[in-house]
Length: 520
Image (cartoon, rainbow, N blue to C red; front, side):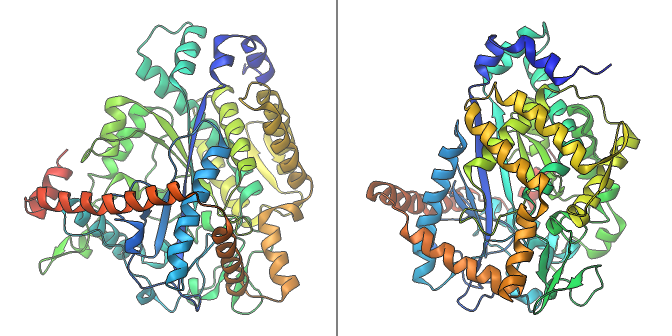
């Protein structure tokens, strides 16, 4: 018999566990494509004034040279993470404005003439830089470049160590702290996967795309304004089969029930050759096409809506870092950029995600059996394509249940958890605001995108480009203290020195470097 969340929470009030929950940690990673003044993906280099994409800790690139990524440090409040993200964007806007470029504020890209529009990211001459570049070359051979232009928001979350000590003592667990942490992080992950459809509904913001993205294929979408395709009830096409879900990875069967099985699943995937990738070749005529011909080149190739993470040592594989040190934090990966917000999200969303993840951590979390795994996959598929359809039904352990009923139940439980959070009022306010989206789907970001296109008579490309220009003006108008600006300039210069040092130190051939890396 599963314990209700009320029964779980009642004894916690006033305990060291509840006090420690006041010290949560969060950080944000945000991607966005650079555009030229015509609204096309920029083919220019990552701006030198922003620093080295290889060694800068806060401003880098993801798949393409134009796909910027902004990374905040860890903070104890979403407001602080948002404030730091704003500083990064204000600095970036100053640099982009000088070269007449903009930052695309939506998850799905705009017009693409073809794969030649997309330049794979480059990271210099070091072996570490070559590894990053060739990995991306491999993604192009495996999946094509266009899929890699999709942008998203990643939210990193962890309680601090005092929580884990208090929680382990509260539960009377005398085992290894590392194993306790990992076990309960995976309980959180299981509950997240069961219920992450709610985040797709509340925050999904990619119900439309430019027709060039699908290249004339029939993908089950309707014609929208101009050269747009729309899903009338879609929430997040980014998280659909048009985005990061693909047929090859659907065969992976990565287990999220515990760390050993998860690590074993990933280790198998990064060491097992796949015939279709072997046909591509690894090094052809002296040029690398991919790092290897395995199901995954490296762990990062596995696309999931949440990941257990640990900061790895230089050169250490992520799966080995996890297995050696245990889970350190989780990374939520199913969040679209909200194109109406200058930063793609706001602090209110951060508070909601925090309380949602604490709920996932404290709520009973049975092991996910094969049938439930199928339900989870089906619920996500329904939500991303049909999430705003009235009377949408989802699979649950209680049988078929309406999305609205289930969502209302979850929000009620979140209100109870909010009372234990660092800022209960901010959490309650976030829950109540987002409850309005559950009651009225027209308030969701996905519905607002379609409404803005229809009311303005604009294509997807026109709407998002207009927002890109508005956001750039906003970022340029935000104050950036002189000492902060100087520090950002110093950090950029230092990152180039760090890259040069790495290039001077790594004297082995890339073949030897890669062999040693893969042999871990």
